[in-house]
Image 1: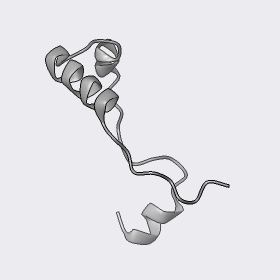
Image 2: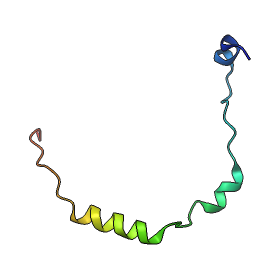
Image 3: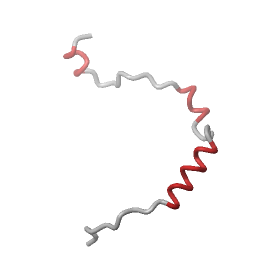
Image 4: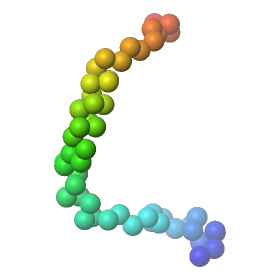
Length: 52
């Protein structure tokens, strides 16, 4: 396919694998998720100077 043909197409050029939908609500790495959530709870963010 030439570049002009690709740009003229109205459909996306990626194929979505629908078999991955079965993994949508499954937690793959529970220990890492728990650690990340803990880090987010204890993280100290810088003060925002631009609050209106």
